[in-house]
Figure 1 (cartoon, rainbow, N blue to C red):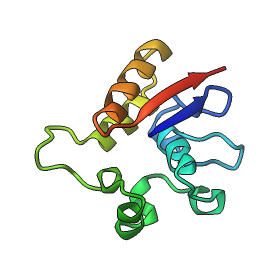
Figure 2 (tube, helix red, strand yellow; figure 1 turned 180 degrees about the vertical axis):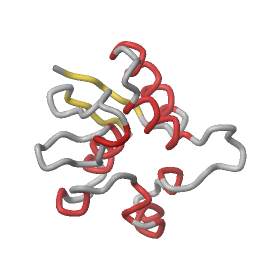
Figure 3 (cartoon, helix red, strand yellow; figure 1 turned 135 degrees about the vertical axis):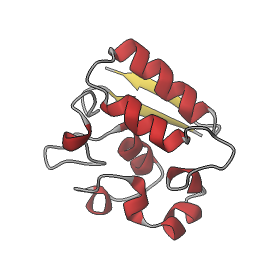
Length: 115
């Protein structure tokens, strides 16, 4: 699967306290953008902090249980790394994009950044 992160919509680098899958101002973290690309509706994403809030059964139906689960074979699960990278206040966007691309790639998801 491939999805696109529009930098004009992408919420990043504001720290964990300000991050949401979808905020009232229309900004979305990388996981929120991915979930929307999978067909999750805005009303289900709004004001949710993490993918787990959608429920594990729903994430399994989307064939993305890794978004909620801590993988036993991963020292730091991809979902945690995605949140950490997305929300970091000290990382520049070039490094952030590279790490996000790498983490999604572990799950056969290709990321394209635009704007």
